[in-house]
Image (cartoon, rainbow, N blue to C red; front, side):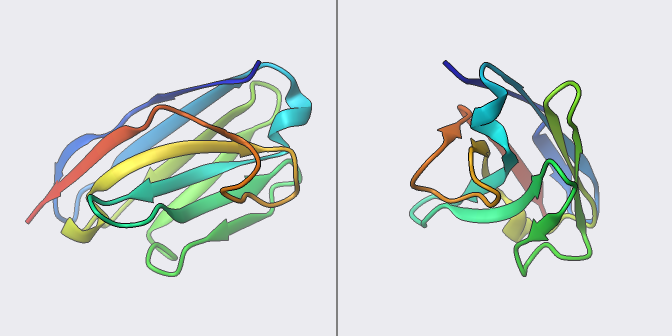
Length: 120
């Protein structure tokens, strides 16, 4: 059984910063890749950022240069530092972990989600 526990999120003004954190527990084989997706109301869930155990990171186009993902392999924690936030970043952010080298929406585990709201 794998559990993903998220923290962080909240309300911030445009241009501000927030930090999300996700701690994984369970079989470490199940979370070779970890990262974050987000979902706006009425839209599909989209990849924000992912990182594998080697530290290779991948970012969605809309967050490149503003968001930074990092990982502590010893503690199985993945953080997402979000800077220069925009109103369009408003969404529920979900932690994701999967056994492969890259994340996908088909195989893996989800956190419960945390709301990020950016006011204009």
